[in-house]
Structure formats: structure tokens, C-alpha cells
Image (tube, rainbow, N blue to C red; front, side, top):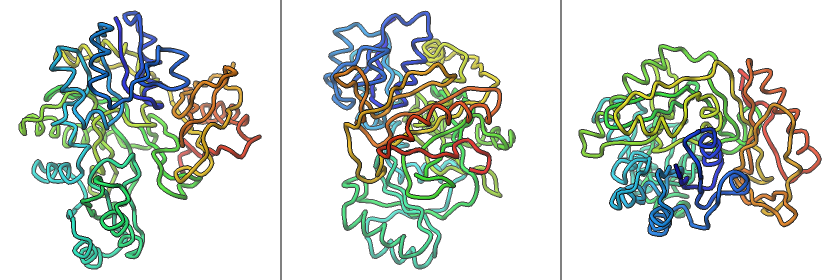
Length: 418
């Protein structure tokens, strides 16, 4: 079986690694891929949102299955284009991907189907938004309506921070069209967790919960990022809260989307928070989350391509999970999530330790090594019988990055207090 993976990040690298475990997969392509993916699959120089080129490539190579990683091609309709040509593709249609593509849609949808989430209002006028902030007070959350690469959310602890965020988005055009409408939400207190599920129509097959660390620096300080590390499962997360999330959030979403004529197929990502009233939704993503996928998929015992075939054929994939802990710590370029330098050589990444290295922003150098191409450069993960053993393996491996100040990483990923 030939498989094409669309995307170029850490999420796509772990998908490729998982596909390599399958006895049924003979050839893997990635468009466009990255330095690490290039060691395990054939990278193709096609951008992840160049839909016509991707379809033409899949037809030419007689690709059996295409798996879409990132959100932008999904919201642009890559799945629809593949299906129109009779090609097998795993991911939601453009109509279904709106659950991530528009926060305003997602909030209105949740309100309609009584799915627990924060109270909110949507604005296009800055003065009206500021008046609402003054009325509600801080802390309060400001979100760009559209896709902003995980950076369009401001958790404002003061009214000034909130009004500045409104000015930046609605007047300063910080996120372009994505920020031409803002959603302002109540601030929810509690610990966050992520729960992915394979979905087809009303069938929902949940994965193991994970938790990621969004802030750039130790002790959850510094600016918001796309994620500086993650761990799975989540110690201390009440199984009742997981069951509630499946029954009262994920399943009603799948049923509601079908009712709306937006039948969902693919991975649904629930970004959730444990509150005193029970779990509530912070956001939905229409695909595997990054970096949580890098600690969830390594725990999956099943053949990934078999899971996809089962789910899309209406069969229960009978998901099996390793009874272990997976932790992953991100190495980022100095300056991230702000401006940073690229093309910085990476230290030798080979290891005889019990860790795995997932590339996100890398390319192969002329000398056969790797250099950086992005803000989040790679993730170092480990699967062990305890979180402490996983941390020990990861942080021993990461010592090789201590000799340079071109990169940084958090030293508290996976610790219970983090």
C-alpha cells in the first residue's frame, strides 16, 4: 500500500513513523515533509495547500491513502478535491473543518447543541469589543476567529491587555483576515487536557488523553506558543471527566455536525479544561494536535492504516494502548515564538538511549546533518513505565543542546506540578 502524508511538522513525522510500523504499508510519501521525515519517507516538493498539485501527484503515483496533517489544507478543501477524484483521503471536508476554521462557528454550534463551553460574544467593531471587556472585566480571553497558527489567543489578565489585543487584531490587522472578527470569552479556571478521537459520522473512537504545555518557559511562564511539550496519559485526570467528555462533548459534536449537513470524518481534537462544573471546551481542532500527537500515537498498539480503514468503513477499530507513559519535550529556536534565526546547525542527533526524536522545523544539511528551519525544531520523547524514567531519558539526551544558546527547551515537561 502506498500512503501520502500531507504536511511538514512534528505531527506528520510521528504519523510517518507510525505508518512505517505497518506490514501493509510499502511506500510512504510526504508533501513537503522535513529533514527527519526525509530519512523515513520520500519527500515531495509540493506545498501542503497546493491542492491541485497534491491531487495530481496522488493520481500519478496511484496513492492508496492520503492522510492530511495540517489545518490550512483542510479548511481550503483538500479532502473534497481528493474525494471528487475518487481518491481515498483521511480528514474532514471543508464544510466540517470549519469547526476549527472559525471560532465563531464553533461557539455558535456549541451553544446550539448544548455543549459545555465558556460564555462568549463575537465582535467586528473594536469599540463595541472594548465596551464588552469593560463590562465583563479581567481576566478575559480574546481569540482571533480564523486560523492564526496557534498564536491567535490572548489570555488577558488585565483590561489593558485585553483592549490591546482587540486593537492588534481588529485595527492593527495582526492576523490578517483571521483576526477581522474576534471572539471574547469568559476566563475559565482549571487544568487543561486534550482528547482526540477518530470520527466517522456519529461513530466516535476516543484516544488516550494528553496534556501539552503552551507557555514558552518553565513553570508555565512567558508567551503562548504552539506547544513546548506534552505527556500522555494525564496523571490525576478523573476517568469520570474523560467519560463525560466523550458522552457530553465528542459524541454530541459528531451527531450535531451530521445534523448540520457537515458530516465529520477524520480526527477530532477537543481542547478541554477541567472546571468545578465539569469539563468544558476551549477549542476544537479538525486534525491531530501538535505536539500531543507525538506522545499519543507512540502509545497506540494498533496499525494506524488499519484503524483508518476500519473507522471509514463503519467498523470499531478496537483501539489498544500501551500501559506506559509517554513524554515529549520540544527544542525551539532562541527567540521563539517571536523572531528567530534559521539555518542553525543541530548537534548530532543519533542516540543509543531509549528516546525517539521527532523533527518539526529541520532540513538536511550538505554535510548530511541537520539545520533548523522553524521555531519549534524538534521533540525528544520517551516511553517508560513511569513519568520519572521518561523525564530522565529525555533530559539526559537534551544535554547536547546545552553547549549552544541558539536553542532552548523547558525543563519541567511532564512533571505533575507543571
